[in-house]
Length: 214
Image 1 (cartoon, rainbow, N blue to C red):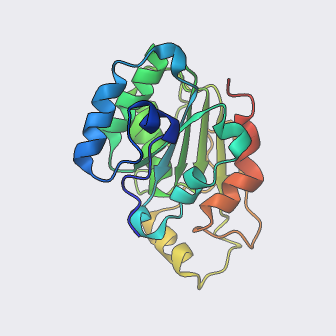
Image 2: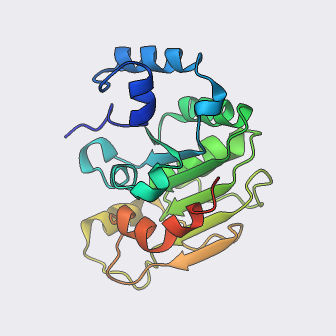
C-alpha cells in the first residue's frame, strides 16, 4: 500500500475544503492554500519522518497513523519521507514563524534526516527531537544541536538483538547509530523490539515526551 498522500493533518485538509488528498497536484494546492490560514488555528507541529521504503513497509508511518488520539487533539501531526528535506524544513520554519512549538520524530534513515536534513539546517527552535533507531553512514553529529531543547534517542543494541532478523540486517548494513553521545537521553530497547518496530519504540518510550508539547 502506498501511503504517500495519507500524510497531512486531516483537520487541515478539511479546512482546505477537501475530504482527502490523492495525488501530488492536490497536495501542492493544499499546501498553497495553507498559506492563507489564520496562524491562530495551528497547533504544535509533530513531524514524523519515514525511513527507507516506508511507503511500502509503513514502519514509521504507523507512528503517524496511530498517534495517540489524546495528543492528536492537541497537535498537528504530519508525515514526510526521509528524502524530503527541503519540504520538511519549510514546514518547520512555517510553524515556528507562527509561534508554534516543533517536535521531530524520525525512524531509521528518517532519524538521520530529522537530525541532519532538518534540525541541523534550520534556525528554528526544536522543542523535542525523538530518534527511533537512527541509521546512516553519515552518523550522529559530534556536537550538541544548539537549537534542540531535548533529544531523546531510542535505539537497538546490536550487540544483543537477534542477528538473523532481516530489518536488523538491513540496519547493520546501513550503519546504526545506537547510543548517541550528543543526545540528551538514550534508551536501549528490550530484545523483543527490533529495528522495524518503530511504533513500539515510540509507544513504549517516546510518546510521553510529547505530552508537554503545547
